[in-house]
Image 1 (cartoon, rainbow, N blue to C red):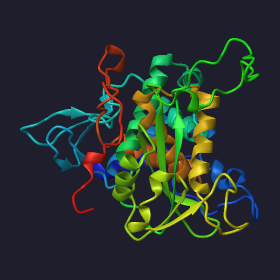
Image 2: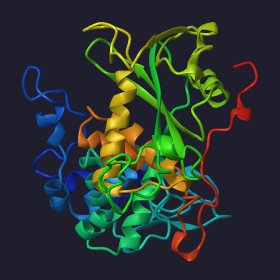
Image 3: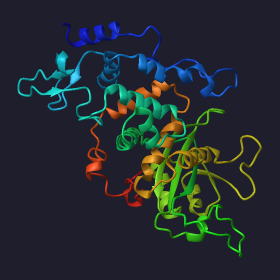
Length: 386
């Protein structure tokens, strides 16, 4: 049988579907002039119907191309040797050509899916479901759709979030940057009955101000770089801090926003000294959302991020604890930045990120091997000279 590049090419040609399965990102972006992207053909270029038509070889080729490309070579996860290694057809594995190594490895060895029990097709299906649900999906719902246990769906989702965190660019934002913070978690329990002094209904929201020192209270800080007019945000960086104070806000912005950029915030005192390093502009939210009807000072890009995050919490996850809050905030940032990308491109991007490194936090989670602490921004880690 052919090996190396010839084998992969033959496998791809022999198993190509009669219709396009989204191998290239789409060119069209809207269904009609002014239409929403989700109504366009580009938003449905890769679906569960496509996945169901794919055979084992086609699914395997998606993973191979996402990890090593299509040049026919593989990288041995044990010794790092790059070669057209021996293909063992009966095992769907390779054997390293290095005589001193000789290790057998698969397309998922040394990745987030190492020692997997799920078939590759189920993993690909799960990724597509993850990407198609633009406001997130719960582990319970994913497990039902894949026909697996809740524990399997939970770990799969968190492995995808771990991949997103590792793949997020840390290059400083520049140009126009919208910044804001949102209070998350840490609410006191709602009252059982109506309170005579306030006439509050038991179903009403309890304001954060009533318990500002709650142990689970956190602030999500989001910084979003604006694109051209009408393009919205093009990059998002998020962090979790205990308080929206100058002690945490200033070092965070200095690390992630290029000096001299135009920064737009509300009039919170924590942002008061940003004008020393940035073109700082503010909007008084007690009076208006924007200083002008169009093109005025606002931080609406940051607010749109929080709108998606809150809808994910309300409609899908229902609660987010501090320990894994950064994982969920990073997922929403990724969704915002990829909102106008086709499903095929989203899945490929996510798949490539998942196949780069083994899982640090989620391998053996249900056996007690999990992350011990939450991920909080540390002001003391500000790089010298940044």
